[in-house]
Amino acid sequence: MTDFNGGGFEVVERVSGPSKSLAPGIHVAAITNVEYGTTKTGTPYIKFTHMTKPVDGLLDEDKKPMGQKATTTMWMSPGAWNIEGAMWCTKARLTVISQKLGLEKEFNAIKGKDAEDFVNQVAKLFKGKKARWVFSGEEDSFTNDKGELINFVRAGLNSFGFVESLEEVPNDEDTKLYFNPDKHIKKAEKADSVSDDTLDADSSVDDEPEW
Image 1: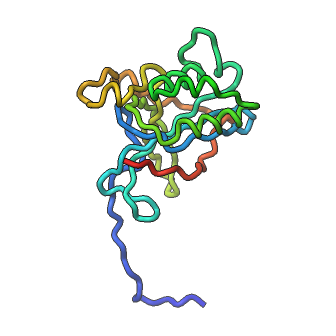
Image 2 (image 1 turned 90 degrees about the horizontal axis):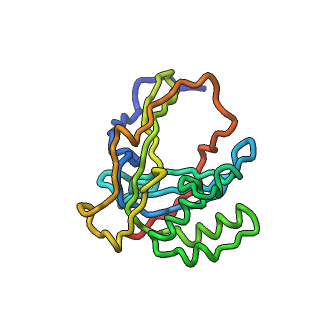
Image 3 (image 1 turned 45 degrees about the vertical axis):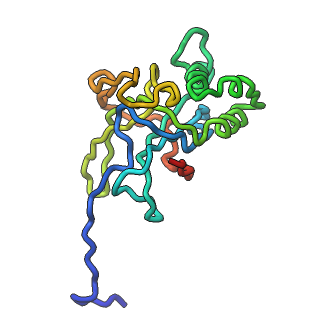
């Protein structure tokens, strides 16, 4: 039986802190997770999670300092995986990452028996590695449990000129990377329906990088 009375409830004020999501721009970050997945319609993809060094006031579920995160999906379907001369295709982008991380020889030696095995090997090679990255953005929105429309910008790796070696360019002020919010943030477009090719919002636990 419910006890209706006016006492005994501890009020905890909610204090807003820094966002757990990385904002579009140029950031030094570590690759904390690389995973394989498929959409509801069977389209395969490789998903990267990047994390910055710990941010003041930002804590994980265990109350430990954590950095800001961004996820990037790269498609592995025939029309996106390996297109000759197309630097936007997934294989080209992974090759660029391997070059900037000094791992091109090891990356080129990977022979996956299928897409998932290939991604698992890429994960072993890339996880924990740090670089300077360009994160572009895309406006998005969702409706919360109060029926309110919440607008936000979802960050992910830019398609071109998106990574720089920290060994070659150790200082942020010397970066040759380029970011322009007017060019690198895509405005939201109204959609009549939601595609079946949506990613599972549930993501695996990331490894905390050593800073």
